[in-house]
Each structure stands twice: as C-alpha cells, then as structure tokens.
Image (cartoon, rainbow, N blue to C red):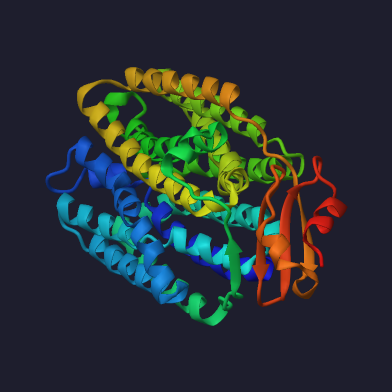
Length: 441
C-alpha cells in the first residue's frame, strides 16, 4: 500500500512545501512592497486558498473526464506559472496575482481521489493518514527552511525554489505514479450537502478542518509581524525568525507521530482533536497578551504541536465518518470550506491589525477557540471500527448482492482488477457469516 501512496503523497509534499516555505516570512517581507497594507498582506498570505476553494470542484470534475494524471499536470503547470510571477513581482498586486495562480492549480482533491482509486478500502484510512503526514512534514520542514532562505537570499528565492519543486513533482507524476485499477462502486443512496451538514460527526470534522487551516494563515500573518515590528514590543530581526520556528517545528514533528498512532490505532481522534484545540486556543491568547519573548516562543511551539497533531488525522476521519455515497461530496465540501477559511484567516488577521491591537486579536481568537472546543466535546464522536469481507466475484449471487441492505453494512463494491467483491461492515455489530449467508450463491 505504501508504494502506491508514496509517489502521490510526494507530489503533495512538494507542492505544499512550496506553498508553506513562504508562510513564516511572507507577511513581514510583503509589507515592504509598493502599495502594501496589513489588510492586503493578509489577503496575500491566504490568497492561494481562495482560488483553491474555487477550483477544487472543477478540477475534480475535469479529472473524471480526462483522467487523473493529465489533470494533476495542468494543476502543477498553473502552480509553476504562479510561483514565477510571485518570484519576480515588484508590487503588492503582482504578488497577489502570483499567489492566486498558485492556488488555482487545485490538485488536492484529484490526488485524494487517485489515492482512493489505488488503495483498497480497508487500508484507505491509513493511506489518507500517510498523505496527511506528508503534508504535515512539508509544513514542519518549511518552517525551518523558509526563514533561513529568506534571510540569506530574499523572498524571491523561495518562489523560484517553489517553481523548481513543481517541475520535480511533474517528473514524479509520470515516472512513479502507477495506473489505478478499475473499481466499480455501487452506491445505495443519494446524497446532498444538507445530509452531510446534518451529520454531527461530519459537520464537526468540517469545522475542525476549516478552523485548523484558518488559524494557520492567521498565525503566519501575525507571528513574523509581531516579532519584527517595533510597535509590538519584541523588535527581532527578520534573520532571527528561525529561532522561533526551529524549536516549534521540532516539537511539532515529535508530537505528530504519537498523535497519528493513538488517533488511528486506539481510535481516539476526538481526544486528540480536543487536546489540539486547547493548545491552539492557549497559543493565540499567549501571543496576544505576553511581553516576554520566551513566552511568545512557547506559544508558537503550542501552535505547531496543535497543527501537527491534527493534520495526519483530518482527511482519514472525514473518510471514515462519511457513508459510501457521501465520501466524495464530504471530502469536497470539507476541503473547499477549509481553503476558504484559510483565505479568511489571513484576511481577518491582516484587517484586525489595521483596526485594533495585538491583545484584542489574541483574546478574540481565544474566545473562538473555546467555543470550538465546546462544540467538539459535545457533538463529535469517535468513529466505529469496520472490517471487510473480501469474496471472489464468481462466488457471489449478484441478485442478492444488489438487494443487500443492512444498517451495519456501510458499503460494498467490486474491484474488477482483482475480481473480488468487498463488503465493509461494523464488526462489533455483525458477523462475517451473516453477510456470507446474504450474498453467496
């Protein structure tokens, strides 16, 4: 399974590494461009996410029509062009155009769909966790490298590196990504946006995914500005930003592994998410209120730990909570909302700095975090554990299979490449022999 997931996860790793490299320093460097204001800088930090939200569904639809690989190629080429425009921008509006184009190559949903094509359902949650882990690693690595590269070579060098990473991703796409098997999914119902939003677990995951991404861009607007601008009381040099990001990155990486293992294997994602939300809330309150550099660095460390604990679990949990006929729609809605919130997070933080102060911003986000924590504690549950019955296609009575309906059977599908029928069921509620009696000749 890992061999199938690794190339696609590597493409996402390279793309997100390019996007994340600029995050730790973009706001403070962009303020020096012609026409810059904190509000416009906030739009630039999160601007790629707005176009990602807009183009997620069109790219997914296009991949169904022309294939996954050609669609991913188109997205990477758009990302490449946007990176080059950003690299050679001379004013705030040219940089904004480059960032919007970077996001317009919205291949995330296509890569997720291709992983679903390649990986059996029983290991798909693990595959999604691996994909999330790669994104989290790109985030952590970017936090260490971004400030160092920017301080030595300037922000333009980061965008040029990003363009090179896009080229490498294209090579990986055609050299390493396998062709998916032909799988026929049989869905026993129709879905709608309201069906998904009425499910408290799916709604909770959509909120968690959106809040995590929104707080990420808010943090990367305010962290470098707070630390380097004299009016906020710290007055660090830009070249010193690595001193806050490096320990935070290390702490985040250390926390990511155990969180993913406990969340998946012990089936306690709700508890992992709640710990993360507490850390998110504490980090923004501390960043807003403290006058101590060491406390501010501790707050950033809390933020990185919270982000990295969540990231490997988010996509996996959405896939687990969604019913079979909801998976694509649920992932699409969750990712579109998350990208939109990524844009709003940066825009909100920039606008807030235009009209208010550091303390008010920290307390306001802290209050939102407390409400988020209460919602998760009350509404969210841990997912049921499922097993899979895999049966040779020739042994199955398809009249019985087509009539198969049971409250504890989540889905069934035919893997036509391997010539088997797969039934996903709640193992604590239903015996394998009961299913066999319902479908075998």
